[in-house]
Length: 324
Ligand code: URA
Image (cartoon, rainbow, N blue to C red):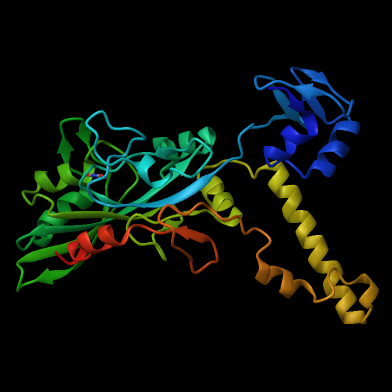
């Protein structure tokens, strides 16, 4: 279906419709390689659109932080009919995909997105995005075995890069050792295989951090959208440039705040940005973009993003797992 160019730009999150019209009349928009200045121009779904020389993504870029529970496959569909990520993001209109994967029996942090550039950058070994895993193994692991992981061990697909290993402690009653492993490689079942190598097969594995993203505020099966700042931090970590439209928005916001502050200082109410001032607006959440709720219940993450709640049954089923 053909749609008006300004609507397509707005839907892609490039700008508001009014701003998109300004972009078009200013000659900043190209459709299939040609500058389009006509406001009524309609474009089809396959039109290649660029703004200021940057291709736009027709579907709004979406970034979801997901706490994958154990017993869920890291694909959007499972031929064997097991629970998959798709079961948790049913109400998200965008087609998101996991960045990297977690084993069926591993739980923890997964990023879901339709931003191919970021996904590729995050999984590329040259960017070395750190991932932190909480590991529990049966028995008491001697320091020299942990040192092997720190140095690197030889697996069937080659030697692992040195890992950071922090011993959390021994549970003498349960005869378990807990430690955290930080790696930047993303090989298949890497942590499990590393632990097999030292003779201590994993009993429990959870990814708690990926780059700057953490599981804070999420429970098993929860999902929330990332904040713009989090996305920009991730982009920076992978060596990607700040997105031009986001940069422009951030600059505009700073200017808006500066002007409001100045007006407040001089007592010039006519130049204030809102009758109640910017704080009031911030509370309302200028970025607040609610995400659909799978379970009929929802709550806010500490930062204010709406969290898609996991089902109560699941929370109970896995409640004790972390404590093994
Ligand atoms: N390492 C593993 O062994 N499993 C995972 O799911 C992730 C890292």
